[in-house]
Image (cartoon, rainbow, N blue to C red):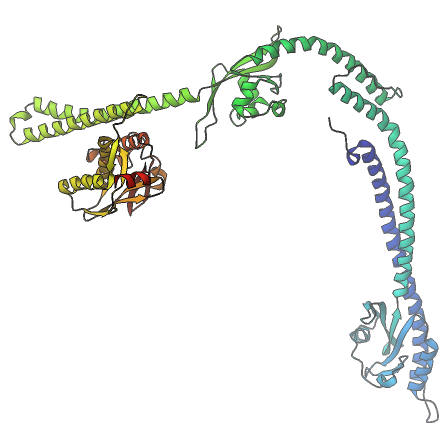
Length: 607
């Protein structure tokens, strides 16, 4: 068993949880405290300034309503004097605006050029129109400090005669809050450090017995049952430690009993050729021998404790309870597109004398070859039966008609006899093809090879078809002008080319063209026959060399084909040491090609 990492240990988790609880509590308190403190400081700052503004408004009203003589200072001068006394470190600017004209009649700004000008400040307009204080907090663009802007209407009785516009430095309030936050963060860090230390000490009192039990479990996993867990107290953990020691004693006794049985069973399984898998009562694998591991392509170490339904790939179809009740064999098909692979599984339930299910035994047999042979046999018998039944059925119907008196009809009788003769020849061709395939399948099959100029040989085969053709099909020859000598059985290769060219003729349309070619490569020649027929679908190209396979069954039977021509050609090319393949495009035609071993030196010797 792997050692528990530091960050996964219960000790660390306990301390982390303890510290996090304290941290969350302090953060909740801190957020509430800081927010309330910030609101209080900001409110006090704003209320203090509003009181001063109200006092300023009182003085401004007196000056604005005061009757003046030519000898008295102007209103602007008096307002400027009042504002000069109002200046303080927290106030950046204060201005007095006349209500009707919206003109600035006094300002604390050193730039006195704005006095007498009409203000466009939206906040001032709002306070004059609504007759109440308007304020907001803004950011100074040149230093990004926060300022508080206040516009207070100046009232004389119930009438608004002007407004006071104030810009105050509220950044100091936020600076104080930043300092307070720093103090609070430092206090939080100190509190967390103390909490972590206390948490570690507290966690040790809980985790120490658990660590001892873990060490005992690791020792038991290695087969050491002599070690005992120390009991630290009579609480729940102490009771658990005593129970753990009792369990260790029981396991030591049980292990001694099962070890002998295990050795006996291991000896039997090691000499078995069939695959054997044993499970516990929950369906988990507890034993698998080498043949079973090899059949399933798994490692014995990785599948132990794995559910058997998962190991056998039965998760979607069967449960472990289904396997316990299974009386028949199960066929496990692990075949791929490239190769078949089939196993047969027989199951036997392990039961105690009381009838209690204690597990399951599965015995695996590799039946791939048997299934492949059976499938080929069934397919072959079905194909042969079908191919023979069709002409026999036709012959029987026509012979029955002749027996019923059709032989007396001079027009019908010859046609019936001709059909019967045609079907008989078809059966003879089928039987001859089957005999030919049977000979090719035999292990003692021999070829009568001799050196042949394949170019002349190919020309002679093409000439036969060109002289005997009854279709409007043209032949195109792309053959070398020089001799190419290969060692072949001339009769068998004639049959190969006959079968391939016959197919090309059958599927060529009227006015079509069949092309014959030979290509020389380093160690072989490629012989090709291509037509301009309907072509073969991509999914069927790999199957056309199978026995009895037809792409268009109805048309092939109508043209007298047996479905064995290309299969015979494939077998004969293979025994010559070559390969055969097809390339096709639907609607454009098909090309059948095969290779034959070829040595350039042989040609030089013959020439």
